[in-house]
Image (cartoon, rainbow, N blue to C red; front, side, top):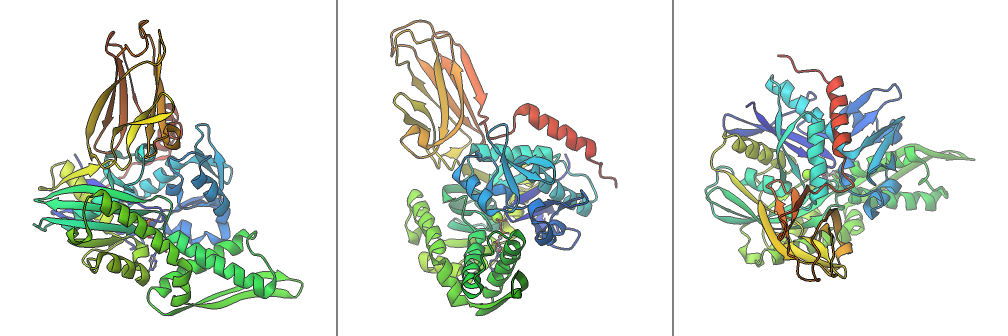
Length: 523
Ligand code: ADP
Ligand code: MG
């Protein structure tokens, strides 16, 4: 088997790494950058762009440039998150045939798995160019909080990219693998990962080369973009007050503001103040209007204080879930570009009463860990074993709409569990199994992963038939469920495929289409 690459498929940026001579290394793209923006665009000439070339033309081609597709993947179109994105993002999001969000740019419509697949294919290409050989297999990381649908869609994206996805692993677990490499220690570490679009908090235990995730918490809809947006809102309000012009409906102006806000934010990580200068941002009867202003670090910090506070709530929940107290945590590792902000570093330091570990690069550590795991899976790297946990409880809906929990969140995977259920009516011939993931006692408040029917139950008084429902979560966190009538031995099973993923036929079609346009790497 060829070499296995590790890919950190980020909301904002992606990174690819490989193990060479026993050491994980990040692979730079052809521009020499170690991270590649997770951005995809189609130009007015119909040319497809990925990475920096796509990001650079965002302002002039905003409605045909896709970013942050990871915030949409595996969600339902009607979900609050997708609706919020549709309002905020300059590209068009439409409802797909599986109630999933699809992205419409130029005259083409893409599923989220396709967009992620395009980014992954670019990362594959970057690796092939560097290694001088073709790459077939990868380990891909996802936020620990991703549910089954989001994981499956990510796996589909890998297949679309022409990759055999050996495993999907959690980003913080990957970070821990990279942090723990070559350290012969027994430690409990906290990983605080604040990226562009997601926040993940995890507590892991490392001993004798085994990394075990003790607990995870987080928010799949909170990240650096929210910090940018606060600056944008601040600029919009200031401009409206001064000139009486609302820039919200001008998508080019909004894109320029967003761009400037992110730059100012990064400047404020290093300096006390940042200048924002956007000439010709609007015009009215009196001619062109320019936006110039200065923002201080203090002002910025007061704009985002509550976002940082919000992350600490997940931290608290995670520590509690791990059954630990603060003094049990040996080290804190910060991951993700947004952790470069001094206020975030300070909040983490104050909370844990210790400074975060400095030895790892927050942009690279996840991809390095994925490469280590990939190498271990094909026998290349010794002494690493990753035990991961399922981030959400799993169960079925029972009579009266209650959620019967079969597997608790934070249970180590792979895992399988079964339980006997029965009928609620006399001579009931069929039962419907609704598979749900979440923490709410009311079934329908949780995510519906899928449903199926077990029919042909022989007539019997209610409460008598024994129906065994078995749950299986594999090491990538992917769920399958079976139901068996103990009397007849009749069985129904599914790999849970919720509506918001691509159907099997659709996936095959996309893979085929991509194969047609693909060229093979030549040495
Ligand atoms: P993701 O994992 O979501 O792809 P990254 O870990 O690459 O994201 O983080 C990207 C986020 O980090 C962006 O919101 C970016 O603006 C922010 N970021 C990058 N550098 C800095 C910095 N120096 N100061 C503050 N934020 C930063
Ligand atoms: Mg990340």
